[in-house]
Length: 371
Image 1 (tube, rainbow, N blue to C red):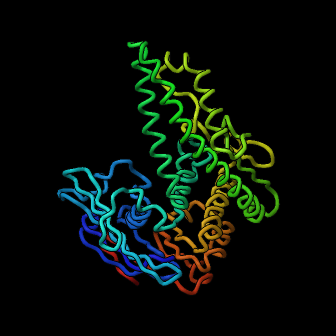
Image 2 (cartoon, one colour):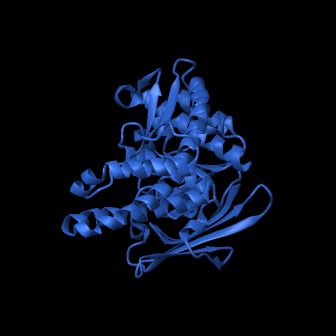
């Protein structure tokens, strides 16, 4: 699939912009703070209705304006085209999603329409940061591949919030204890689905990333990625797993009521990275961390291609400034057949030598000029 065009109105520092992209590599360059990352952010926004760098949509609204619009035209390998449009209102704090001018009921309807992999400098902290950062990476990837996963995840967190509120209330009104079993069973049902899907995805990701990491590290490092979950050794039977989780909730009920929170479940799980048998979080050098994240992202690309038989879009936000020449060369060698968006402060001479179909765009104070 490819993104053919992008239209922006009042998005970040773009009051009104339209651009037509190359099917190959789109290299977006300019000085810092001119709006390069905003372009990639808008594309990512059309894929999952959220920003990769803020949790508040209003932060993307241009100052002194009431709403912003982001619209892209996507063409699939089959030749089918779809327009994806999102309008955000600063007054209502709500988003309106349209696909081919047809209004969609929920944001979940967007998942699966645009497959992409985003690699930013912040991702280089994937290993060192806390579990929430790693879970978010997996959750976004799975939501794109399996829209039903996004539904399960949304329901899980809503039920979790209700259950945690109930745990706090039980301390004041012990008679509410009789309602806890219903919430535990509902929560365990969605937890089992999430855990099984995460487990399958991470196992597939780990196998591909291991192979790619051997190439990047020149056969010197064995990368192992695993899902850290209390129920990791369970089989893929959702009902059996749900019963085990429910039993564990009951075992922990006294502790949960005292603390007013749920201690186990997908919201507490983690993804562990090991290099040559040792956990990378505490030992990996800067170079090793970059190699691990690069392997992780390239594996995500491969999984999407294998599962939907279509190559996703690749977004690379200023990552080459963080990669040495060998790793940059590896990325360039693997861009054939992938529509790619790259940002940088200046044109990269290596990309001209490596790739034929490259289109350059210069960004200056919120304006886009094709070179």
